Length: 135
Image 1: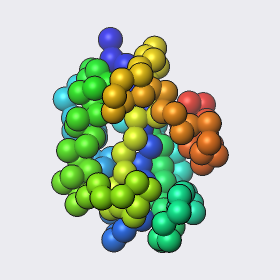
Image 2 (image 1 turned 90 degrees about the horizontal axis):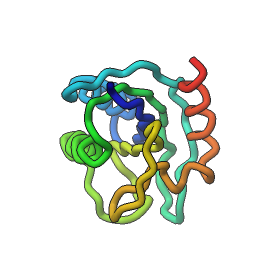
Image 3 (image 1 turned 45 degrees about the vertical axis):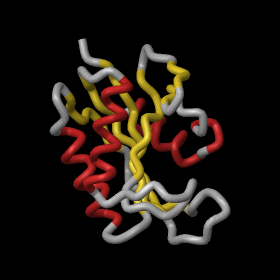
Image 4 (image 1 turned 90 degrees about the vertical axis):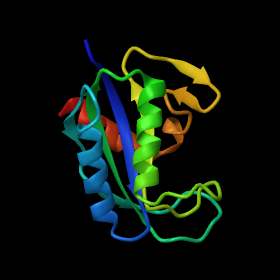
């Protein structure tokens, strides 16, 4: 039986709407994966000390046969294909894909923590998560 995972999408460089659209398309094309719900897209202020443009953010709920570590690898590949360069923490990015929650999973490993440790601090994630969990 597939797991339900909640993925946060964000973009603040280039054509932000297009980056989110392509991310949704590529996520839905992953093996054994389909999007089951999408939150509204909202614009938010950047987090952290670096001056940068506002983000577009969205949360999606997916059903996936991929285990969280494999899902993370696939999401990072989608980020790289969108031109994501990891240079500075909380810096501007074409695409940011975060595993926020996976129902039935609790993980604390190097490079992967589920639920995402920033969830309590991000009001927009909480709003978006509530929207896709109750839709």
